[in-house]
Image 1: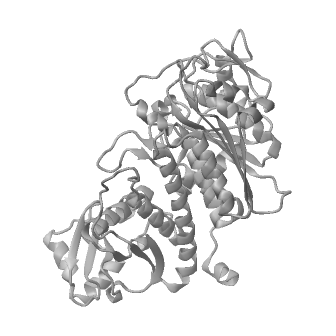
Image 2: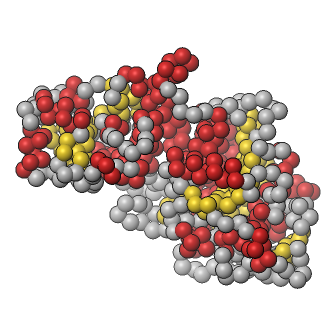
Length: 512
C-alpha cells in the first residue's frame, strides 16, 4: 500500500475515486460542499431525497459527477459532527477503506482526514487514518494454497489536508504511521503463525536477522546452558516439559549515547501453552498459540524504534518456551529457585507466564534501565475484569503509569490502571517457599501482577496484561479471528512521547 499527503480541492482531483464525508442528518462536510458547488447541487439534492442519511456505516457511490475530474465520488456517513470522537473516526475510515477495496478503486484521494474529530489535530487524524487503513486491509493467508484474491485491490491512498501549511506535520504523521503499521503487521504475523512453525528457535532466528537490517541493533540469544549458569530455574522449569529448546532473546537498539539508560520491554513468549500438567480444556486450546503475543508485540515495537531511528536506547527481552506436559514437566508442588534467589512453590503449572517473566525481570536489572515495561497475555481474570477493550496496567511508579495511560489515549490503544495494593500480596503466601505462583480464585490478574512486582523492585516498572486485547477469539462481522497487534501502538507512542511532542509546521520547516 502506498500512502501520500496532498492539499487541494476535491473537484480538481484526477483519480479513480474521491472520498468525502456526510454528517447526520443529511449534512455535507466542507469538502463535500466544494463538490456540490461544482455539480449544481447534485449531492444536496440526493440528500434531500433521502439517498443517504449520514449515519456511520452508510455509503453512496456516484459515477462521473459533472464538474469533477474523478471517476467516482464516494460519500461516507460520519454520524453527528458534535459526537465525532476517536472510535467513530476509526469506524468511518474502516468503512471507507473496505468499500474502496471491494469496488475496485485502486487509488483514491481521501478527504476524511479533514473531519472535525473532537480534540484531535491533523497529525493525529492522518496517523490514525494510515494505521486504520493498514489494519483494515491486513490478511494472514501465507499458509493457504488458495488465497482470497481481490481482483483490483486498493493500492494507493492520498490523504488530504486543508492547507499547504499542514503538509509537513501530516507527512511526519504518515511516515510514523507506516512504521507503526509495519510493526503491528509483524506482531500479527508472528502471533498468527502456527506453533509448529513459530517456535522459540524461530523467534530467535527472526530476532537475529534484525542485526543485518539495522547497524545499531545487536542481538544475544541465551540457550538453556547460559540460562542455567545465570540461575534462571523458573524459566527452565517451565521449559522442562517440551522438546523445543527454550531461548532468551535479548535485542539491543542504541539510538543515542551509551551512557543514556535504556528503556526495557519484556515480552512473554510462550509459543504454545497447553497448561502443562495442569492441562487446559481441549476446547479452544488452538488459541494458546497466541500466548506469545507479549513477545510478538515488543518485537514489533522494537522494529519501529529501529526503523524510525528514535533517539533513545531500547532493550527488548523475550523469554521463549513451550509449556507442555511430559515425564519431565513441572509438577504442582514443585519448588523452584528463581534467578533472584527467591523460591516459588508451584501450585498450578498453567500459571507459567509469570515464571518465565520473573527471571527476565531479574535479568533486566543489569541494564540499569530508565524504566521496564513487561507485556504478557497473563491471566484470563483480566478479561473477566476488563473485557477486550483496554489492557490491564499495573506498576510501581506513578509517573510511568501516567505516561502509559497518556500514550494509550493518544494511540487509541487504551489501558486501565489497576490496583497493586499490599493487601493482595498476602494471597501469595506459601508455607513451603517464599511465595506461591498463584493467589487463589479472587483477583487473579492482580495477584499475578503482585507476583511480578516482587522481581521488579530495583527500577521503575509497569506490567501490561494483554490477555483480552492481544487477539480476537472468534470472527465477527467487524473482525477476523487472530492477533490484533496490540499493544504495539501504545508502546511506540510511549517511546515517541519520550523525546518529542508534536511539532508545528513551522518547526518542521526549520528542521528541513
